[in-house]
Image (cartoon, rainbow, N blue to C red; front, side):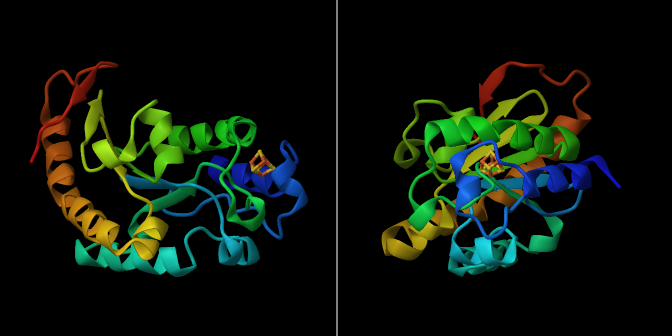
Length: 202
Ligand code: SF4
């Protein structure tokens, strides 16, 4: 059993926060264990809670369409969430729930070691862009070392607000350019370490 699979088992039986009480299934995340791209959403919704899989409802369908539009499939990317259990009534996850669940996401990132981390929505954005407003910074990548962090609106927001759908589509369309940038980074003799750099690619 891989370390990631062991982590999934731990998540499925976790009772570290109150969200364990209302869940049908915890949703650890899924994707290739060495995925180059990781998408991080907010938390499971109704369908995700039922199936124990991330992004399987309407927002997931849109995410799949967006991936297809740039020549990727969901099987090629890793998909995780900030909290692994469904907040009741799809309310926002609370700070103490995000904190309780943080070690699982930290570990997933350590094990998968993605080079491009795409945050979907403001809760995952806060991990890497604390205090920022998603309306201002969506679509603006930041590089730290050999990893690029890229904030986008959550696909669910695009379903509810047609004007955000265009923004989500435009931001997704820039991902191939980021992947090309990653190839340049790999070729650098001495990759920058630990220092944040705002990338102006577009
Ligand atoms: S949300 Fe995270 S910390 Fe809370 S019970 Fe589920 S797995 Fe555990």
